[in-house]
Image (cartoon, rainbow, N blue to C red):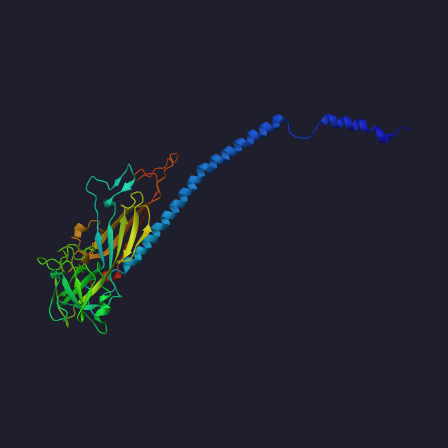
Length: 375
């Protein structure tokens, strides 16, 4: 009888030699590498194409957020324009609330330089929201420190007589060089006013506070040609005067607290920024890469008829820069994403063919304090 235990060993060795070692052949390995190389290259190309799109979307989302935040701040300031007047003075017929400086490009001209993607002065207006500083105690104006003669602002000197328990020392702390002061004069037909800008800190003089400033016009009483807020810088307003009565008349001196919205396009021409400054406080940046900031005004066409022009004018010469006519404003803001310097990026916007995306925002603001006297 054969020993079958060992008779199968040659057969197993033969089968193992015929099959060889398990694995890929060299050709199969090269084909696999080529396939993975093609798939990897396609994936990398797809990622490379979409990565800039993601960055662009992120930049555009940030731009939209900046515009919305800036508009919200402007709207909040705008609706409160004309507030803070001393409650003892009845002046709802002409509150100073908003002044606008429109920069208008001439016919056939443009406000930006296409070659450098920079924007100039005519692309941007300036908006001033006028309120009174409620932390500064109101006082009576006088031509001397005893409160016995009229104030003439063309002289460049005026005295403030404290009201109530306020002392001259306390009152003097509110008025510093560069501050703007509003003088109000009440008459039976309405109210008259002017503004002055202090060129030195106030000083205590007896029981009064002495103010020094560049005098207003003597030939056109009350006109202050250098008023940075354009309240009394022209003779078009019908409420200007340079004479104010001493106590006990109901004439007052109030500290102006204006909020200025200005686009700074000179510090970095490649990145115009919308700034906000309240009073003499710090200048805050609200939004970057701003390429358009325009302010339109809806005005009262006549003090007697009270008709409101619903067409917003973006040129203040149409209403002679008379702030007393303004009843509502329309603010238009245009921003851009940071200009793309990648030569492979072929995107160009349809407005000025710049390598950036544009977003715009617009809001209409109706200041509640500026329509109280309308009939």
